[in-house]
Length: 280
Image (cartoon, rainbow, N blue to C red; front, side):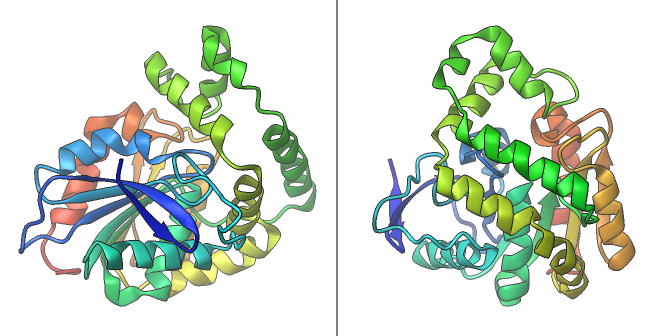
């Protein structure tokens, strides 16, 4: 299995397809307590066009924390690790598609290193409005969920269905439910807590509007119509802040539109990334 060590962490990554001089690579970034595995269908399709990179963020999937790993769980730290990864792989400029918490990293990366991003796709993200009671309740529940993650859940079909119902509009094949739980169970507690705070903490509700406003790269926001985790209303608020953003809402999908409606998702992604003009 391919790994690259960056700041004390062996980052697991997968390359699909072949580099083409006229095409920039596509990089896929996964979300909170997930892994690069759920990007596989998108990566396989995109590999027909050019090289596609997906990798596991520090502390998630097959990129476990070690005593030597950085304990900085800020969006900036993860952005710099992505920069180091593409530098090591020789990618000068990329198209970037990032999902959920990963989209917060993608947004930070595009603002920190605008010269490295040709086009940006942010899936299931947006601008959050701070409500004290709602946020405090969410953090309390999240901390409990992070602390209690029994591995036995993966062995029971009822538990797998119940787990994925929170994330999708219609149940996916059982293999995806199993994958979601497996990734959730192995996520390092420090990384889970740290990235949760970095991406949707109170401070983020004040910083995200400015981050969307500053974006220079042509950007497509993709949201699921019935996403319970990050409702499409947040993406609409981002477009109000920066009218240059493009928004696509995929009907009858939740938090994983790339798996729930793969054809519609890929069509939106393809239309944006392949369009001439801006980002060329």
